[in-house]
Structures are given as C-alpha cells and as structure tokens.
Image 1: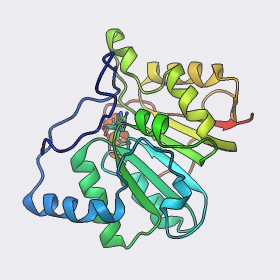
Image 2 (image 1 turned 135 degrees about the vertical axis):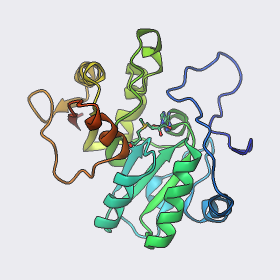
Image 3 (image 1 turned 180 degrees about the vertical axis):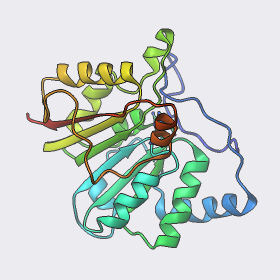
Image 4 (image 1 turned 60 degrees about the vertical axis):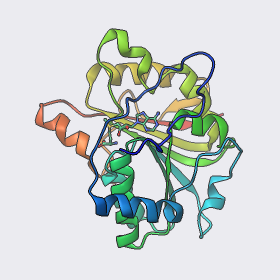
Length: 234
Ligand SMILES: C[S@@+](CC[C@H](N)C(=O)[O-])C[C@H]1O[C@@H](n2cnc3c(N)ncnc32)[C@H](O)[C@@H]1O
C-alpha cells in the first residue's frame, strides 16, 4: 500500500482512538492505476472545510451516507437501483475504495461519490448540519474485546457528531451480526435525545437492504443479524 494514503488529519496533540486499523491489502498494478485515475473523478478529497454534500453530485437530490462500505456491495447495488438518490460512501480500506471506484466507472454511476478518510473526521470537519436524509452503517467492526470497546465506531461522541448532520425525519440504519454490539448500539441510539426507534426493539430486516461481504461471514458462523432503524425526531 502506498504511504501516500492519509486517512487521518488530527495528527497532533492527544492520540486519537480510531475505529479502524489500516489493513494492508495488495492491489494489482491495474487496480492501482485505476485508483489513481478514478479517484479524482469519483472521489472527494478530505479537506477541513464545510462542504455541502448535495453539491458534490451532478444531479440534485437527497444524499444518503454510508460509513465503512468495505468492498461496497450494498453501496453499489443501492446506487444502481436508486438513480434519484445520491450516495456518499466513506471508507479507509484502500483496496475497497479502489474496487468501488472501478465499478462506479464500469457501471456508469453518477450518483455515488467516495471519500477515503476517517468518517469521524469527515463528519467533524467537512459536513454541515442537516446534510443527510439517511445514514447506513452496515456491519461495523465489532471490537469484541472489552479493552477495545473504546474503538467501536458507535459511541456517544460519535452520535453527537452524526445526528445533527442528519436531516429532521431522516434515518440512521445500523446492522450487525455481533449480539453484544447490537445491544450496545441499541443502548447508545436509545439514549440519544434526538432519535426515535422506529421499531419496538430491533428492526425488521428491510427487504431493500442488499447483503454484504461481512454479513455473509457472520451468517457462515451462524450469527444472528440484528438491525436498528432510528429516525431523527428533533
Ligand atoms: C467489518 S467491515 C464491514 C464492511 C461492509 N460494510 C460489509 O458489511 O461488508 C467495517 C469497515 O468499516 C471501515 N471503517 C471502520 N472505521 C471507519 C472509519 N472511522 N471511517 C471509515 N471507515 C471505517 C473499515 O475499514 C472496514 O472496511
């Protein structure tokens, strides 16, 4: 992996606890070339300046955010199936970003843009309030060991960044195959004063959600998939 990839900005001062570890992944020369050619076309560079996500797309429309899209199976399928909705995907895993860029190009999608950066910093420094009509967080890293709970993406501070950036009546949709993380998500989402659970407890499996690579890994281990669907109410 090239050392040029810089997924974080808050370098100095107190060491930040991140929700990810950079996984090394090999890319073929062809994929590396595509990544370099297509990032300026379908990618958005991180910059610590407020940027209206709706303005990043050629067509006007609501914007749905996906954090941690991995290899992008759900992202690509949703973007292809809903040309009237604009999708912004954030991911730090470079081979996933490269693969999605290549598919955006081959599928001719103009409603999917990618930011390769820590989503926490993107929300904090780039995204204005009331930007998204929906947010997808599908199978975030579970960090199952107690000493790693602080690395879980879903935390009170994270929700305090995310929720104001969702439009009123917009939704946050999380899915996990880790029972303990599902409970943790329910507690944290339920404690946020501006969110309302659209279901009594866990959500029904929503038929429109495409399955993902990590979902399949969970199913292979006989894990139960748990879904959480909340609305911004105030
Ligand atoms: C377990 S994988 C799930 C990938 C995909 N959603 C799926 O279901 O197959 C979690 C992904 O979230 C990404 N991720 C974790 N923390 C992130 C952050 N702060 N910003 C952007 N991506 C992050 C990781 O790089 C990883 O690819």
